[in-house]
Image (cartoon, rainbow, N blue to C red; front, side):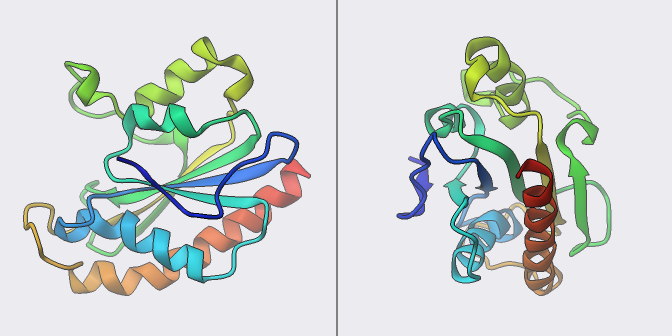
Length: 173
């Protein structure tokens, strides 16, 4: 079940930035979204910025969009072949396509959700979607913490997310 920050109720009359943190909190570097979620909430976000933790992402995001989102920032661990701890920042539509397609509704990821939202719910869509990821090293170990390089990148990723928020606030205000 997705976890949502207790102060993250989004009111439609307000323009907001939604930060969607993805990650399995019990699997090594895949837990980086979980750690970023908690670090972001402790970092003093502006009142118009809301956070959402989705353990595995995907179609559950639809339950949390209400049309007030002026921008969305997705944060997650990545496996792009960079040095572990490398921070990747990109517009959503510039991310590389996955090597395989989902074969069932259980395989629907955020990419597919962002493709179907404008069709199914035109009023709940923004095309201001950005991605900030940290290159992981270990994605197979249950119960393991973040690898050292990934853990060291969390603080820098928080700064980059705050800078991105400031830039987005200037654009959407």
